[in-house]
Image 1 (cartoon, rainbow, N blue to C red):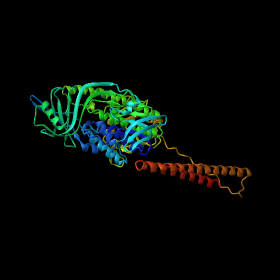
Image 2: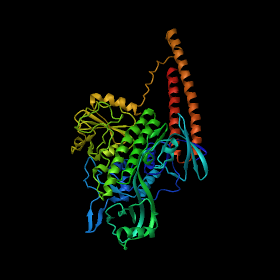
Image 3: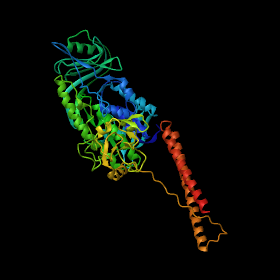
Image 4: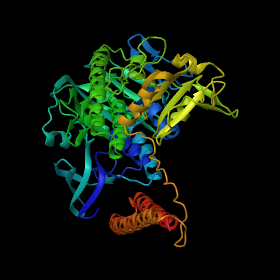
Length: 594
């Protein structure tokens, strides 16, 4: 970073929320700066549960296979009782369906999840800046000026938006003066990643009947470690060394054959349930744990954070691309009620865990959460119970291309675009094509075939109906063909507009000085030539202005280095094309007028 640099978005924090947001912006070619005051990436397993809805998000971002390979399904829980060990399932297993291809939560240590996100980010040409701390910021109507302290001193970075993804103790939230009401849940706990001997690797070991005696060792797939968890009293000093944790296990389990050989990471914390009063102040937003803080029960915190970022990313990109600023208001109106509901679920699961009931059902999957009451759910869209509604999660379904190759709706949704699906529609009834919108029609006259009936089963569409799917995989509208004008108007409001196509002027008849044209015609012809010469001169001036812009952007490339070079060079090329096009248009006009 140079002493003063410019970017579109500054992301403060490199946890799951910050990395997810960075990935989404990267694939949309939005310039950003990703910073963290920590000297290196987080190394703990803390948020180890990846719920089905987050798995769908990670598929869209291109990392799901790597994340699946980094972990596994939750193991059977072995509960040690006075009558002997009892094995029981932690989660209710459900078979994947065409509409819901991910049904089972994954157990992946948080540090591995974040590592996979960083790897994908590197493939897109970006990297986090560790050891860079946000120490202050000011905002005005045009942007945010952030002061960032790093190994080479303090820098000022100017951005359109600042995102606080900096955790429960968020500097950004505190600097904005945003309240963080909630409660301390009366539970202090330890969590540690340990190398343990004396227990088998294939089950999640649990001891104790109540909070005074509970302790567990959960295998961390993708590593040779176990995650040790236990509630502990508030008034005791803790020894989180290998020797101290071995003694702690001996005290709680009565076994001296379970030995901790090494501690990779350990933490003691008080459980809280808190929700920020607001997610936004001007051009500064909160996301992830900076906006909400959960107890670890149910694996909801990291997943809610990922989906916060996934909701915010496409909206930031749209507004930076020309969509109305009001679109960003829907971030809080959609995500804050979700966090509030999830906090209630986490507290309920915590109370169950105190009773040693750790079973998890569908409610933790987050597949049923949606935005039916959102202002982005098109008014007048279907409100019956015969299929998907505006605001629902858009289901997956296998389909066959007209060429005979199989694919899935999720494959068609993947990427930063909107998707419009028409069911059994006339091929001339579709809306105006536009950048950022992929249009597919399903049926005998379409480019897709619902050979198994899975689209019909999941969506409940009738003939001449259309469903509009947002970039984050939620339904925006379900309308009949006669109502497509409302969809087109809606797309205009979110920045998805048709290309402006200029109509070339009709060429004037060729005239020569010896022509037999009347004096009045010659006079008109001279007027046309004069106007053409003025247009050509204007085009020349515009090209000169573009050239100066070219030079400014070239200096930006040299100053900011290779991280932003690709985006900047793309901008330079576009400017050059604009200039050549305008110059050519002026030449053609001049020749035709002569």
